[in-house]
Length: 561
Ligand SMILES: Cc1cc2nc3c(=O)[nH]c(=O)nc-3n(C[C@H](O)[C@H](O)[C@H](O)COP(=O)(O)OP(=O)(O)OC[C@H]3O[C@@H](n4cnc5c(N)ncnc54)[C@H](O)[C@@H]3O)c2cc1C
Image (cartoon, rainbow, N blue to C red; front, top):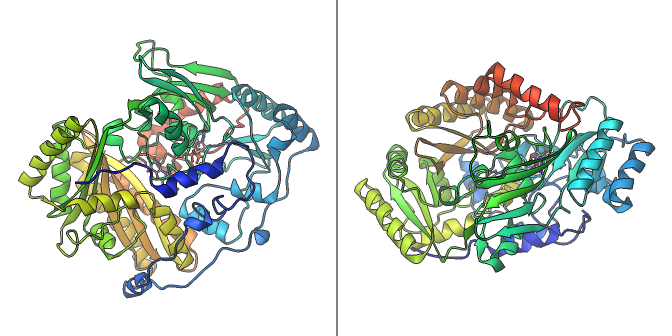
């Protein structure tokens, strides 16, 4: 058993550069434009990884991004009139047309996004990046954009992995990215109710920095926490690594302030209500297609006095999954809970991989089975009692405790995956993830179906795929599955991955899972949205869009087909 700070130094350092001056110029701590995190946080993969990859049939072909000067950008289409109108609202310094700023706001951070950027393709870059200071400026910008027929892409941390920042239906109109980083204030703290108001542009680490002096935490820690924002969490219905204890982000939201082309909208005036359908749910997950979320009121918790992470070995993935179902059914969900399948367990033992787990401990090595990480946060007594009850059930089900190192390893590695992905791309190796969720009864078929679809498609293309998976985010009725794929790149990795992802999408639908548990729909999951919510569901979304955004300027083609 081990306890530690939730924020590793690397992540804390990374919080700084996204300062709130609105500038996106390069500093030493600025994230690289072609990948994740600042350059100094990038490390080559340990010697030996290349050998393992080669043994797996994945050729290593060192590959570097093109120089920034060689990135191909489309010409700026913004008219002088439109530009002056935008400048009149936010000021000259907050309408940015420089090439580097446009490149940095081009698409999101999926592997295909990165492959395109690394090859010099910034064809989806916005014409300009506009940085409003507050809700009223956002409202005013939306009025001007409606009048001037400018497409607006709300932009938080830019960590979308589903094409949510590259609207495909711009149809020749100029596009601006509305970078919300200047909306960075902590608003009212309502101690009695346990809620705080947070501006949409606040990033994960900054939120915790602002709350800590008040003895509070949000507890929302997705793997993209270093860069993703409050508005982005709400717009995508994000789920963090500690969702078992704190809940998904949408469960934390009690109120929303939204700027739409049709006007401002405030939602959420009581903890619960019967005043018709809960319209907050229309905004949560709306991916910038209905409005710009400018402020969110969230439930917060006292900073936990104790935090422990433990490692376990379970005999196999099926047994582990059943154990997690038992825990969830008894309302004993750990704050953090991650069960790696056999392949992911082996990959973690072999060294750094594109997963966010990294067990190199003696106790985990060579013993077979699957690795499970559990974590608990809260008061000392509550943590001890809960951990003991969970341990009892796990032991009775055949699990073996792995000692303190496995928990510590997981904590140390919890934000490393995107850095490792960059290192793999530098070796010419493909690495990407996808996720789904299903009811307990359908989870085994969902696991097998998606795994098979990915293995078959990439295998047929001769790319020697390694497909691994972990269960995380438990519910009383089911759980999510998170797949990681490492493979050779082949001649056209973007097209090949799209084919593989399409096969996985079909498999998810066939097995009764959701097309996305927490990454959202964007453009990439759209082909399967109809199968999930029905044609009527799509019509409902279209009518909401028509009401809130009659000119269709907000993220056209994202979420709503
Ligand atoms: C390496 C990596 C790890 C990840 N891990 C996780 C994880 O553990 N859990 C998880 O849930 N997700 C994860 N993601 C996905 C992503 O980080 C989440 O979707 C996140 O919530 C996006 O936040 P953002 O601020 O970066 O939003 P962006 O990427 O900037 O935007 C996402 C979408 O929301 C819209 N949007 C953004 N801000 C607003 C706003 N204020 N108002 C209206 N619309 C807005 C955008 O237009 C876009 O469509 C990961 C992504 C990466 C690259």
